[in-house]
Image 1 (cartoon, rainbow, N blue to C red):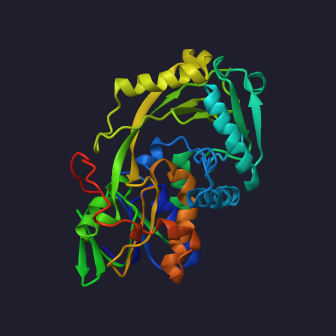
Image 2 (tube, rainbow, N blue to C red):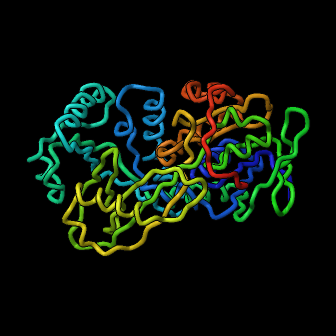
Image 3 (cartoon, helix red, strand yellow):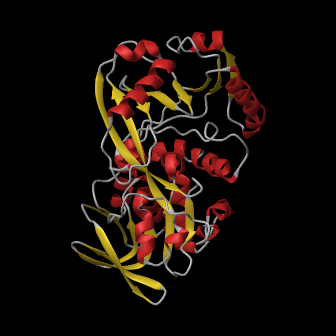
Length: 387
């Protein structure tokens, strides 16, 4: 294969976002290697919520990173629609973080007091007001924190639009390319080895999702990339004339109405190694979520169920930055349940790091150096498989 200035291992939304921003900053040759289809793993099993406040119970570097990424989406959605013709379906239909009991209601109201300072429109709704805003909300809900500034996108469309944007600027996006090893010289990776041959590389980005620890192990640096797979099962219900107006969200699950009238119900979490099979127990869990959040919609026809592997790090936070001990390897992994939300800020900051050698201060809390060999426990991920 021809040489590349930057080789990105992984064609999920993270790898594609990095390719998009890299090709915007430089005319260097960028190659993305994906063993399956673009966006076919964790990206495809995401409902696409962009909800940094919903994911945070206190101010944190993660929240700062999420808000920075959220701010990039409106302009990017317009840009991608114009340049690629792909609509990522950025939808501001309002998100209701619902409380099932008084303790949850008190926590959400406490969150409202400090989250209001971040500039997104938020307000508390009591049970009566929730049902006035969302008539299909379940009768047992006792209130909700209503956020009008946390939208959602079509996850797979986002990945494909980013990939198409990068390709139009000269990037190679190679599907069906399983990476089986790395060629090194001292403290540099000089080529990425696939089943079809070697790709010479000037710089390498490790964005292999749940498989990232395997690649790091080839470099003797697995302790800095302690990522393991969390299976997420999700289901879709077919459109009916009557459906939700808003996204309903709890930490146990969510229901997201999409533009075609369908509903996405998600998502389970379990450690099953690299097994992506859908289980009856998982589907039952999701139907229980629907029963509580919007019971009248249980009559919607079932469309399909599927699963993806979320890349979870040892502290459940992303790993972003130079891989210790290696001069030309950058890590962008471990985004867990927030890969869609964090995709744009990851792409932008990692591209800047690669091209200009500048590390955005937002990245410092997420550097791989925060992990040490003694801090990372064996996760028992069910056996390694090549990314």
